[in-house]
Length: 228
Image (cartoon, rainbow, N blue to C red; front, side, top):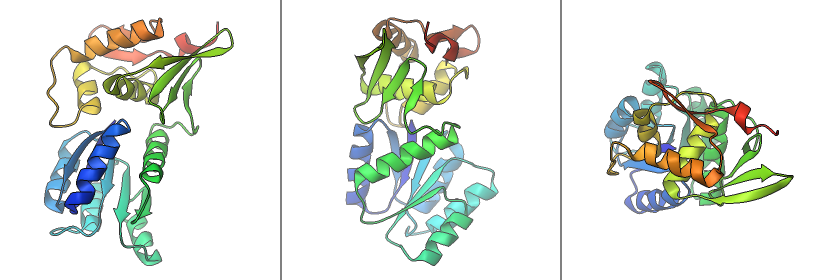
């Protein structure tokens, strides 16, 4: 999943970029409100982490502008401001969650995962469709066969790609659309890379549960994931 981090503290920004990448997020980052405002409006992010105390435009103004413009991307406010009235203002401006500094990266991660599931209409705590389950903590997939779960090792890109497809079952996604959601802005991307990773996932799962619709793209078919 593609994430935008807007944080002006350089040390924290660098640390979060590293930790979020290790946890399966394609992360773009900036250190000011003006740039963050533009990126949030013009790039297809799945989720945004927003600091409030930015050096130019406040995070609250950035968030209010996004919501007024009809941008519904889930936003988690990450800030040192922990007063109750500031939290209330943040939610009124359109925040989806609020985490005060200092914090543990594990808590941030599970909050982001919960927001992504909620945005995709998946209320379950575990990302699971029929016989296919995704272990987000270990970044592996599991396939249920004859009552037992078989572990499927995934690379970082395979994990991001499968997670996106599982969060949007049945949705036809073009290769260019998937590129925008599994790679960050600075990654070098080849034109056929999605096709390559789809083929790898099919081989690893030993099932053709990721389908191709000519002229529309790839999609995960829930019917093919049900028990025989």
